[in-house]
Image (tube, rainbow, N blue to C red; front, top):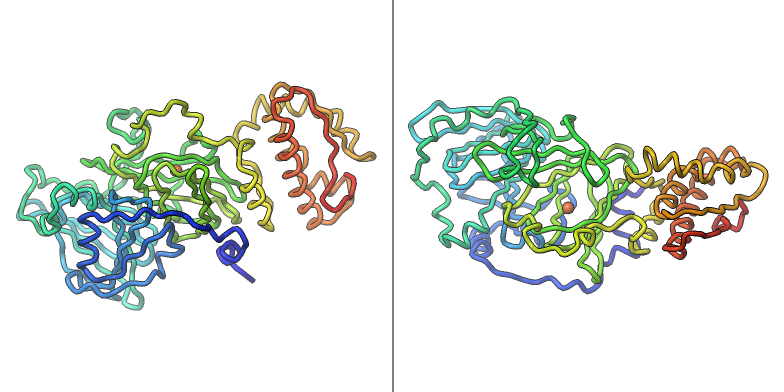
Length: 462
Ligand SMILES: [Fe+2]
């Protein structure tokens, strides 16, 4: 049976067409070329755990650079593989660095020149940790039977546009005056509930503060966010680096949005795809699962679809806050978020290709609105068992009504009960009706009164 990724990449919509990729050449690009290991470009890497690597003699390991279009010379991503049972040579790196464990079990030792004790901590699949600038760091593989892979993330491309000598950043003898205490924070992360919004990513007051997180697929200390999912924001001590992880339920999708460049997204868990597009241009479909990586380019819309059976998690490693995107003047913030009802029909058609149910994930159908919608559709629902459904709806808010009709009133079990059809047929009818309802709402959008008769794609009256 074809995997989700295979289904996506073989469908007719996968071909992105002529998408113009602007090619830039920064000091960092020239340095990558000089190292001689593979450089992977494009829009996404389906699996960092299997991406091609090459021998990097100075680091004594196989490695590859990932420089996708959206990184745009701001952020770096390097995959390194530590051979079984081996420890890599120590490196002193001049910048803060975030490391995400793609696969394996290992140990990291961190120390500064002669002051302070060495700190050692263990990591495993999907661990996330941050190493402060100007520290020595040494990574080792604890397993003797298989390699370990890590993804290293930093702002080196941006830094090398300022001081254009890459050697400045490796094994530089500079020592921070307060470095003796570095490493004290490789312990349990702490919840900050009233943080300084001027310092935190996105002006958040609530975030997790620490530099070691044992397993991002298991991290369950989450809070709700404005796009209808759960998320956690992570700030690293003594650093302007940060990240967040968003979690959204199985078989749901999120609203399209856009922002600044440089955010490297890796997937700790889940299965689905994301669509990336520049306004008015062709779309890129990026299939993902654990170990995938993609980067939305600057001001490109992107939308995430979870088609798997478990909640999906994406971990976004943030660029410098200067590139967050909101520093630009935005005349209308609503333009940076596409409501479900305003989606391009291509998105819905694309979605209908999936053989699985996709529920609308909007939180807006909950609570008071849900109750009001139920009351508005009560009469028609009561009459459905014996006669074809005939939706006569009067509403000043047809968008909310549309969501409710598709996500609630037309659910699979109700169809099965009222029309005595099998589970598979009910599911396909549900999908057809969901799309049909949205299309009708599209047609009648803006009209306070509209009438519609529902029929399935097979012509069967419902
Ligand atoms: Fe985003």
